[in-house]
Image (cartoon, rainbow, N blue to C red):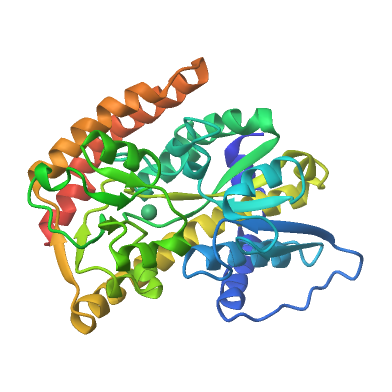
Length: 366
Ligand code: CA
């Protein structure tokens, strides 16, 4: 089925009216009384986020609520936070084997299993949120993502985006590449690989350990998300400097994982409900972050006296150079190479177009 058919699967007017109603209900944490009186199809959604965690965990809840409501109560998706049914990093296997029908997380967590998975979450100096959506939904990216997950019995869908993240929280100033040398930083995925090649020491740890490690000096720096999440997480209490921009995560796509057998067992209209609910949740999360980040940043700077700093230009240029060399080395199989080539050529054309559109407009507005 063509992607456009899926997107248009729901009657446009009904879908818009339904989504608007659902959006308000989910945000107000109200429960809709479903019109359906039979036995609903019950699905379990496991997530890599703490239950109801700001932005990300809420995004998973919103997605489940959308499926419940848009199906008119014929489906019921119950969300479990990380550690409630399975630990965060077992979400992928859990949905693949059908222990849960859905998962919510980010593809770069599966880099150890699939080297190219991070390309569908975020790549250092890669695509921003708008470009990720362009590549995935209309540039061939989602087809490649499906092909990558197909052998394990999973269907991926973009289901959220954080926008450009922050470079992170530091207790030491970064004035040149020399300051990166030996700096212990919590930074996962391909960003961590770049950090290592730049002479830093990337540390892998789940979110739950970040605060204490930073506060006790076990690590010198940590990246998490952006102001909205980081304020909620209290990271300003453990570090002095808040650096930007998030070169390592310029527009992170969150993913919904769907068990292929469970999906195939649904009637076609419910399949479209699931797919389109993911699309709606994908757009809603970016809107949520866009609406909240600046207020959170203001609170961090004005109330909590955080020192906001931009990474020096030469440091960013060097990190970009290392990143591009590293990207070339990630691909080994034929599929890997097709993913890499598709991503790189999309980035090239997005760079050209956004130079005359977004970039030019931002500088005119400033
Ligand atoms: Ca991050």
